[in-house]
Image (cartoon, rainbow, N blue to C red; front, side, top):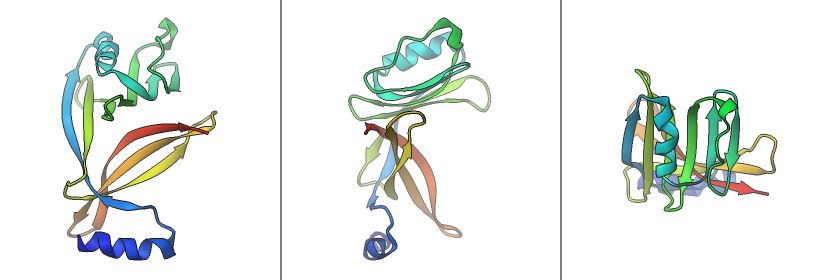
Amino acid sequence: METLNAYRQFRESAKLPQMEQGAPKQESALTLTDPDEIWAALQNAKPRQGWLQFQSHQQYFTDGPPAPEPHWGYLLAAEAVTSQGHSLSLRQNPGQGWILATHSHDEHGNGLCDEVRHRLHGANGCLVYRRYWRRDAERGYVQVHACLIDITEE
């Protein structure tokens, strides 16, 4: 990839993150409409680490998800990493319900990717995301997707 080679030459002097070839590959997507089904579907995906957002609670986890407390309400959103290295995302569907999607990394995919770290609020650690970029004829390279790939504790 000509663009990737040019980026690598420029990266050091500009202090930019490392960029590689790659694209997200959707492994599965499950549409859920019943809030009571969401937790079971997430548990079935066997998340190892990630974060959860309930109606009245949010937290990260690094050794499997915690048991939900009744006063937290329904699970609204989540991102996690499985022991197989797949990225999970639970998002509200623009229509109705939720979508639980599983993605893997295709290192030969038609695009570019880099990694970015976001500090964990109230903890010594970071959420590590892989961002995916695709070339747009009018706008250049634009971010098209991001997947949680790790949680580091410092």
